[in-house]
Every structure is written in structure tokens, then in C-alpha cells.
Image (tube, rainbow, N blue to C red):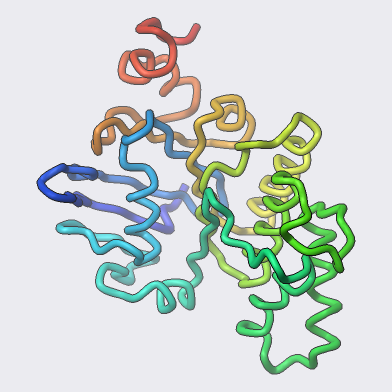
Length: 243
């Protein structure tokens, strides 16, 4: 598959601690890829660097040949790269509908307010949000909040979505809803890169996986290949590769 997002020799240190150490990564277009690794491996810092929230010390990040390093987050978002966060970052005292309208008010300013409301309701339905659009975000379960955050990400119209632990806190029925949504997005031509600790989620969704540990990319390949690697075995399977 052709790489849409390419990362080369990406390094970042905080206070002398190397969080990313010459990371190379190719993210295939219109597919689901995953980054796995133990806590402190550098996964979130990688997402922060891609989306412009943390400037790398060295290395390149290119989107279809365009260098992203040095760009502010809003410019990277305008080029088509969006993300979700572990802490979701919803507006708790806005309703479900208003949380999605915040994004549409920025991306669809030429549309009438009524048209944006119709579009927001359609995105909430697409994301599988079952709560009333008039419910305050703070009154939702964590799982429902997560689907609202996904609907808001869709409202931005990004071509590449960085999903930070989309499976965390979801019960089995909610996981199935999330699987269906992510697969449909990839089928429509979106590129998905996710961070995930739940390896069942990675098995279900990812075509390619990169294993990070202490800032270095130590294994890459299909989920089966990476899970069978000695590097991943030491972190996840008690030193024995997964059969």
C-alpha cells in the first residue's frame, strides 16, 4: 500500500530523557494502522508530534510529500490530519449536539445554522451516539462521550484520523459499534492510525502494527507478526511470543 504519512528519524527528548528515538513509520492510505507499546513508550508523544502539539528535536513528518514539522496544529488540521484524545476534551456544559456544532461552525461556515444542525445530527447517528442530542455531555457515560468525540472528529472532515485508545472504557457492544465505524471510515478512503493497549482491538482493526518501546520502533508488520516478535512478547506475553 502507498504511504500517505511518512515519519523519518523522528526524535524528541524531555529534560534529557529520549521519548522518541529515531522513529521511522509509514502510514498506508485508506487503511487502519496501529501503534502499540507499554506505558511510557512514546506513543502519545508521537501523536503530539504528528499533530503539531509537540515539536520534534529531529526528523521529518511528511503528508503526501508536504513537510509538517514546524507547522502549528491548526495548519496541520487544515491539511487533513485530525485526532482524538484519551481525555476526550468535550465541552461538559454543552449539549451533545452543540459539541459537534462547535466543529461544524469552523468547517462549514458557509452553510446555514439549520443545515449545520441537520449535519450534526447525521454525524451523531453515523457515530452511533444513542443519547439525545439535547443531553449535556457531562451527563453521558464515558462510552457515549467517546462516540460524541468521534462524531466531532468526523465533523472536521479530516482525511487522516489519529485515534488515541478508541477502545478504552468500552463494553463489548460498544466495541462492536466502534469497530464498524472505523472499518467504514477506512472503506470510504480515510486513513486511520490508532494507539491502543487492548490487543483485541488491534487484531480486529489493524492491517499494520508498529511496536514502540522506550521511544524506539522495535517491530513492525501485521498484527500476527508483531505479536509473535520477541520484543512485543517481553511487554505483553510474559516473555513468550503469542502463539
